[in-house]
Length: 122
Image (cartoon, rainbow, N blue to C red; front, side):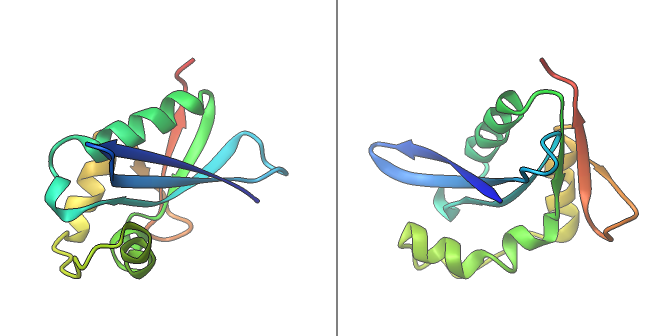
């Protein structure tokens, strides 16, 4: 597996990041995970910008996500990386899925709770 990290800064400070995992045996698909934006910078377009950059870098690729893993499983690591004390996570499952639907991601049956986007952008 190959991981590629995208970061976004404001005033020389890290605001957020996302990690894409590539599989050398399946070059036409990637797994996008660990999207994190610091609490004080949320709802300002930083997460959208990160995702748009990933979509641009992976044309003609199927992109998979597990929306619920972003806020729950990886938050401790995100806090360590960004050196923040923000321990309050107030994003519901519906909110998370709605965020991804804006980009064209759709729910899939298996694995359960995952979403995918068949990125046709060139």
